[in-house]
Length: 401
Image (cartoon, rainbow, N blue to C red; front, side, top):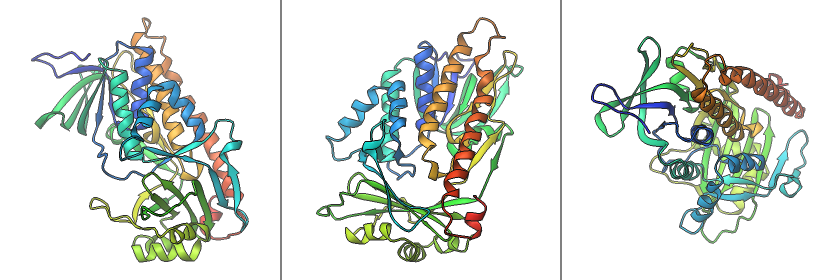
């Protein structure tokens, strides 16, 4: 557990900023390798807010099971209440490269079926599970990251937050800091790292709800390409469905999609199957006092340079994980599985570094190389899949082929 004294702030082996998938995976990986490590997870998520990023591919479930098998029982239990954390994804149906709908069935996947998540609820359950499994090692504090400074001759970090049980804020000390803050990369950018964007992709999303008597039994992910971008839609628990439009910020449709009328006109005029899914089951726009749909968010391919500082001659070190380190185009469906895998790799390496007796024996030094391999593989796959759509000649498509 953390150490504390009147002269020093609470001190931990590792502070993780961000309690979503990447942050929880990192904490659990450290704990699994080094159970006596003291880990502080700082998180400011609001579980009541809708969160985009609701697709969990089937292979990701295997990684999740290795990190924290207890999560499956926790999620299954959620079905017994009023809210459900997930529903099964039966496959993908896409209009991509040709006008006909092409089916990919989950039953043909050797890893089984994926999930459509209530992402905010899933993240909350994952945090609860982390605290239960790693009780005595992991502490979760509701707070917002403010600043980070090197102290004691660069041998430690001081992390300042708002919240943490004090009205005037709180300060924590550690030797390792992990940035799991998502695309914002709030910690890394404070430390001088830059986010390098490969494109200007935006995502405009809206959540719809069907009447309780509606029977939308289509559990597929629907994807449709159009002249200036592409759409996808997934069913969600509790009779909800998310619809997302992707385009570049330079495209005229990006201005139209910011307003509900423009978003709906684009949906009806540039899709067939997704617009039918909405109209057939009498979906209405979800009324949420905390969100005004459609919502615009960045969805570009981006990487952090540098993504870590792992060599420090015994001093303070840091590393980014998940979207803070590398953020992928949603077409790849690789966001959550990469967040889980990077958390496993980085957490295991940090745990081994904490217990290493020889400073020269540093297992974290390989992290930049691993990240580079993941990024290059992703870029090749992204180019391949966008290259399969040859029906459109606009700038959106030309820049991706």
